[in-house]
Image (cartoon, rainbow, N blue to C red):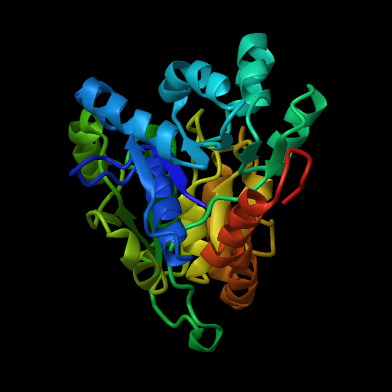
Length: 353
C-alpha cells in the first residue's frame, strides 16, 4: 500500500504550530510503522511555490493508493473541490485539523457534499463526530490527535516538594491563549498571601504582533512572578513539563480545537487548570486530570490556583490519572487505527474508531 500525505510540513522552516506538528507526527508515525516510502505534498509551497506544489500534488494523485489530507481552513477551501473529484478512484482520508469542521459543513451544503465524498473524515472530538453524523455526513468518526512523544514512566512519579509552586503555560504566546489572565491570577494569589508562593513560566513562540505588548505585560502584569522561557523542541516537551506542579490553559481563542499542549501535559503526568473551551470536556476531566472553570468566569482561574496549592496531595493524585488518559492519545494506539482503516477492503465510512 502506497500512502500519500497532503499537509503542512513547513518546507525547510521549523514551524511549531499545531497543524504542522500534527502533520509531521502523522508522517513520523507512518514511517515508524514501516511505511518509509511516503509520497508527500507540502502545502507550505501552495503559496510560496505553486508550481512546485502542483507537481507534488500530481505525484500523490498518480502514485498513492491511499491519501491522507490534513488541511487548514484555507487549504480546505482550495483543495477540497479537487480532492472530492479525485476521491471516486482514490481512498482519501481527511484527518481534520481543529474544531471547525462541523460548523463549516453546517454553513455550506457544497462543503458538506465534498467531505461526504471522502472515504473517512477523522475528527478529534466525539462532539464533532456526532454533529456531522446528525447532518448526514456518515463517514465522520472520532480519531484523537496524537504526538510522537515518550510518556513519563509511572514509576518516575515523585512527590512535588517545590516551594514556591511552579506553574507553566506551554503554547503559542498570544492574548487569546489567556496569557495575561494567567499572569494576573498568579500575581493576585501572591499579593493576597503576602509572599511569593506561586510562580509562572511561559513557553512557546510569541506571536509577532504581540511581542511588544507581551514584554510590557511581563513587567506590568506579571509583577515579577512570571518569566518567559523560550521555545521547547517537540521531543523535549515531556522532560520540560514533568518538573512543574500544574499547567495553566486559560484559552479563549475562537479556533481552539484539541490542542497538542494538553497531550503533552497528560503524557508528562501534569494536571491541568483549564478554562472550559468548547472541547475541554473531551480532554480534561474535572477533578480527575485537572481543574476546570467556566468559560465566562475568567476570574475563577485565581480561585483554582489557590485551591490547588492548598490541596497539593489531591493534585499529586491526579498525576496517575493524567498518564492513564494519555494512552488515548498515544502514537501506537492512533496509528493502529489509521492503518487498520486504510487496510480494510471496501468502504470504511461507518466504522467508529
